[in-house]
Length: 168
Ligand SMILES: [Zn+2]
Image (cartoon, rainbow, N blue to C red; front, side, top):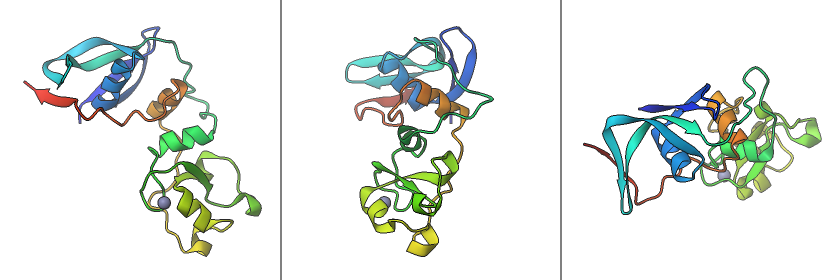
């Protein structure tokens, strides 16, 4: 996997992201290419750009490196790539692993993205009580996730279908 280095608007290195994410940031005018791969290009119907090796954000973002990124429902959905933690389908809701009715808190480690159906089915029960297994454990956002959250990301994984990667 080729990763792309992301610089803040102030040129300070922030993080690395996947090449896909880097291209989407550029296509969404959230970043500009500072340095490109000499031989790798991204080609589509109306596009032919060098694959970015280093990009720079157009707007300065404050990324909490030492401090934990603040919890939010949107953040949980972005962290989990909008995938349900119980079935892997598209998630639009946030589930408390330990339900709020049992003292569960709004924290990164107690919340996961969930589809509405599974969230409803699990209701006010723990995964054990509901007989529902977590496909993955919740985790603190990575520095890359924290940066994308600070940028207002909804979902940077999705590449336009017409955009192909082409190593010349
Ligand atoms: Zn589900």
